[in-house]
Length: 82
Image: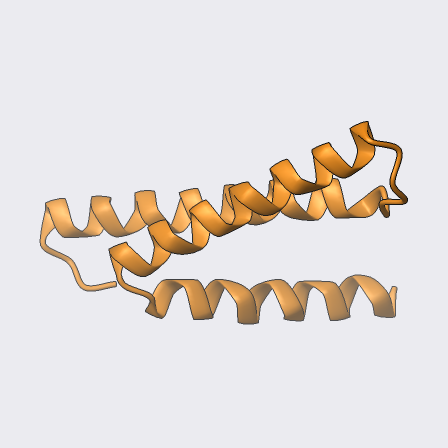
C-alpha cells in the first residue's frame, strides 16, 4: 500500500508542475514525451533491452499532458484562472 501512496504523491507533484507551465511549454513537453515513446518502440523493435513498464509510463505521461492542456484551454475559454 505504501508504494501506491508514494506513486500518487509523485503524480500529484508532476501534475502541479504541468499546471504551472505555459501552453507552449506543455506542447514542447508533449512532443518530448512523444519522441521518448517512439524511441522506446524503436528500441523494442531492434531487440534492445527496454523495461516494459516504461511504455505505460510514457503513455500515461502523454495523457496527463493532454488533460492539463485541455483543462487550460477550457479555463481560458470561460475566463477562469488555472
